[in-house]
Image (cartoon, rainbow, N blue to C red; front, side):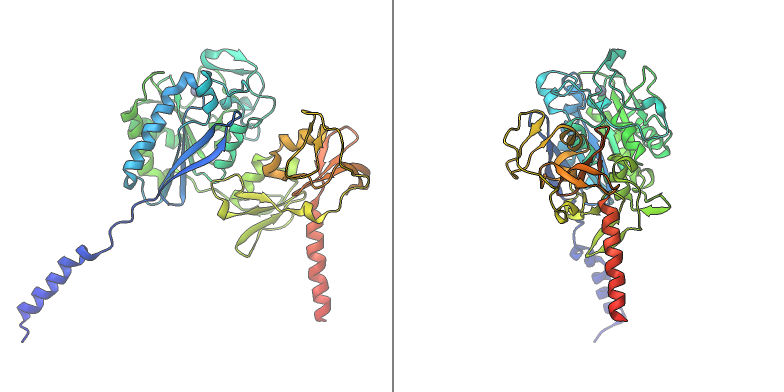
Length: 442
Ligand SMILES: [Zn+2]
């Protein structure tokens, strides 16, 4: 016998009891990462909290020992979010790098172990503002002028760790001390400005549109914003205290508004062709047209991998390598090439002009070694697959060439180096295979 009251009672019981049996809210995952190593081999680490699509990165201690309080702050922030991962909204992946300059921190200097100011070393030459372009001679703390920009943009191993780690970032917070303000990237970038204002309000630091004491060239924040990453510098008030409560409030304000504040990486149009966001950022940060030439065809997705043909390389997105330097890679087209004529292993290989590898019998030297190193070395081009020899280049000239896993280098009469147009050759081969298949059908 079921009365109406009894049915209602059972219904209410189910209704109120149901939440007891609902799955508990998923705890955001937490992971310790090693994302690279310094010039002296010290690990550069990051803590990841959360699993969302929005990658927000906090970078501590770019300026080593004199700004050690930003290392203390970043470490305290990491400890806090490790203990309270639920404070990171589900849409966000928060990364905290306690120090991008472990050598400077250990050696008691603002610079890295090679005497370079890491916040003056980035390639800021491709945004719309010439004032902040990379230079050797830079302004440092207190406006002191020195030649600490590095030998060329992105020359330092720490700069390259940051460069590849931020490839897919939406936002970046670079902690410095001690001026007591928050400012965005120099060049006009609305998301950076909005993030700086949000952080300033949360932390009670003063918002400043510009760092007005001297010109910052080659800065990480300017480099990041030029790729579309919302980028700010909070300057702690003191040079000694971590100022944890203020900065936690600043970070929490950004986290709370992140879905509105931080822009998704954007596809761009180059040469009239859409370039997917991550491929565009990789192409742009490595020198764009100058190194790889323009895109020649729209990107395609094959076997779950996005690939696009540029004149001098085929670029591929490898999602399984996220948070490593190999998220975007050049296709290994050098492996399809034969060695140039007369290439023979050398007996003599005096460092530093010549460099050998344990993984391959081939060495690199002179102009090719400098070009290989300057444009990303192993991560970009892979190992040499031949020694230097002579071959016909795509321009019809008989040139010194060397084959690498992911490129072929060609030496010009003025001693400059360029990549052979392997992307173009790949496109021609691919198209001719397609037409051959069509002929077979007929
Ligand atoms: Zn600093």
